[in-house]
Image (cartoon, rainbow, N blue to C red; front, side):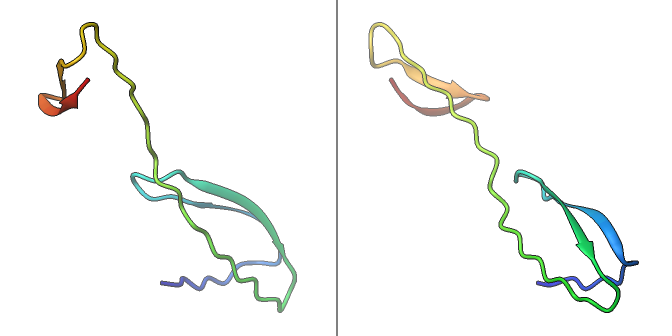
Amino acid sequence: MALEIEVAPGKHKIRVEKEGYEPIEVEVEVKAGETKELKFTLKPKVAKIVIETEPEGATVYIDGKPVGRT
């Protein structure tokens, strides 16, 4: 999906964000009569947790839900 916006000539900071994804911020300069096309690919926000137990074989719960065994 594309969004077309008219802006004044000059430098502009553009920020693209969506919940669950890393935001992207760029600065672009446009001249009078110019059309700039920008395309962004947002990367999902992820975090990893590594859990080790001694002894092995413990059930692991995250937010009250079982997610696996060590």
